[in-house]
Image (cartoon, rainbow, N blue to C red; front, side, top):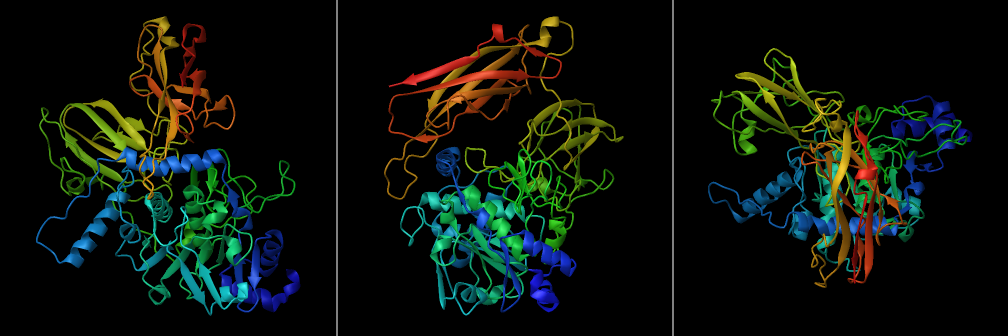
Length: 604
């Protein structure tokens, strides 16, 4: 690419927004095979061929089960009618749609069920924002654009998102996918004053302030081999949407798609690929990194990671030190801090039984005999940001929880970017409790209870990651047998975790998976909470016998729950068996010989 010459490289740098020196740009173009140049305009093009991905049968089954499980998990959930004067029909529709979007974005809330295609294509994360990121699921036609020059075609027709062979309508599973993808992308860009929306305002309305992401079809329809394609730094430029080829991602795997959508939109905002330089473990380096452990960068290959985020190249051997959030902020305004940044400036919370009135701005002192709930919500828009809240209460027990964006369906399709934490202080600033997610890939802080003195004012802050307290464990050293853990009960059942009529065809779609519940105690009979249990499954949905299960922590009841992978079946004979491999808790030992370590369920 150095052969392009200084003039052409300067044009590319100007068009793409690249801020480095020309030799570095030339080296980047040489190193990344998926980074090219559209000669007529000088735009950088990311074709992202390595983002094309084939999901395993187990990953596809899990995605189908998640989509169906949305209905099973919240079947009783209903839309809340708007109160007040009777509005016009159009106003009613707008109010209901805003309410649907708000309910979907509520921290911890599962995806709504029973949405129509019209509602799914009218979702909006921040309707008042001037900037727009449009997720286009219903097909798109493009003429007279640089993409037409790339494809050497006068007319480019992108297919609608389609899983059932009917591109003219969306069935229940497709609608569930659209909602899940929108919600995940909205979470990725939540730190910015931008409306992530499935409503199409038209190309003219996006000029200068928005970007379209076309989702559907296969790359081979008109382009070639890719999971997605985008012009770098094309945000707000007419006729330059980015494309996400859903049939090349799974096919139609919602987790793969939402990662690719955020990735391609990132390119349009000026972001480049996250890879690794040559190193002892990988002498050739990588154009895209899959991350480390449970984490991966969005601008790498993030399909297979539990937690995905924008980054600044903080991982070992990074080949790209772009501060993703700072680059995005050159196009999209970052949201200001919404709550107090210190104990003295803490946002006061008033007693309430509802989430909405938990946003009150005056604190209320409550008698010691009263029980009340306070709540609030907001967005942490900067790395390391801490939000403070305060309330006044009498003596007794207090419970604190921090909810984040819920995963997709029943499975472990994490969408949250924030790994939450809460620190509880008294009025003097002394720490009463430090609360964090209970396991490595968990993002929310589950409800935790602690005792506090009379007439104390507490503040909770988010954004730190410290070790969680041990709740409910017998660990006072009075009985030596408290240092020994024993599994006293274990049960495996076969479950049907889906809505059997979730497809538009109305035919029953039968999924099965197995559930194992283990009960952990100390040898003296004390409840063991927050112990980490590992084990393996032998079940029809697993990729192999003795497949490792995701580790689980015991709850305050001392129980841990494990789910096998889902599989489609008509009820044929089978076997599910769960085997405990280890139990870990600092300062305690697991007595395997005295424990139930295996349980099975056979069916005909």
